[in-house]
Image (cartoon, rainbow over all chains, first blue to last red):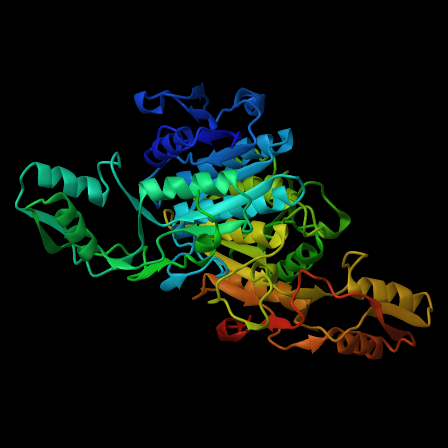
Length: 278
Length: 278
């Protein structure tokens, strides 16, 4: 396996795990982000601002065979116009320059928020109907890249990430908040009713899937990155507590359910299951 | 009725009919387009390029109470990236400047192409799934304006136009081609199989509906502008021939059906029927 792969958003939560996975697999890797962070060590690092990329961005990234594109600014505020006013045009412009420069394959991190308020098992064939500015902007970027790559030789693999959890996650995330509260010795963990069904994947598995999709032939241009198994947020929290042997207990019903998410949705993993694991 | 209304795309096919309808109703009207044309006479005209608007665009348009926004470049090439690479950002930027300047009401011409390859009676509640760059860009502009107007006091009325026909239409349109061929005395009119079901509205009726939506309170922010009645293209051509007493006959099956349109689709006119006519 001698692929040369570049990764944007390399210093983010998922990016750090993807870089580790690439290096573990002995793949020639270039990491890029606005500023180097300590965790992106062990591979070449190129500093680049996607909103103001250099004209020779493709060459600066070492003319990669594959780009794993994870960068996206402005989260976790899903409702901000930033997502389509700044992020969508910047990202399209940046990726277009790489596609026009001859990038052979592009693997992008999309989101389950592209589906919008649809319940149950969500499959890639369903029409999207995003209800947040974030989901809309990701969905729009995907459509624009589909039109663009149809006119070029770049292979596009658009992945839809469901929920991730793991070490190094942003402090506001469920797992990070629970972890901090438990280690502080707090007796109760304030949370929502916890009945909502979600699809949670360990970040290490998501990273492995992304690397797999980058280095192997992929029959799909659109694929859910998910567990395929719904789990209630209450059960999820209980599992995390059990695994770590924490003594904290969930205090249910402290927060309302978000109005921009359905009560029960998870990914249909049939396509992902058909891809060969590394 | 003392509204002050501005109209973009005022020199286009639909725009000329809208201007006439506004003037007939005694409404104070400002027409705008890149360059004045003979047919936009009888009302104030402001020359403006939406892709490069002046900073005081709202004031130049006379600080209107309503904008009827019809301008859209790059048709009839539905597949060009122009629609989302140039038209979408230009139009959003232009309309955002008017909304931020205090425009009270915005009536926009969208398209049935936002629905994509969905068959049968199409209602406004259905999720969109455009399959052309044109349909995608219009759908994206609508979503962006929905997010934007939610933060401002501007009332948005997004209309989805189905097929129009009438005098002054572009030479490539079905009605214009038939009219030219008939008046030349040609015996046969080459056309598709003609079995496809569509929704055709006389342009004069569409103009009347737009003016109605502009000057009256409207309960809907999204509304089909359509007849609500499916008609085969073959029958439509036969009707036009009968009405004019032409002797030309349809020669069916000369062209394939377009692959970006369903075989049979028309608008659900329930919402339009609920609006009060002028």
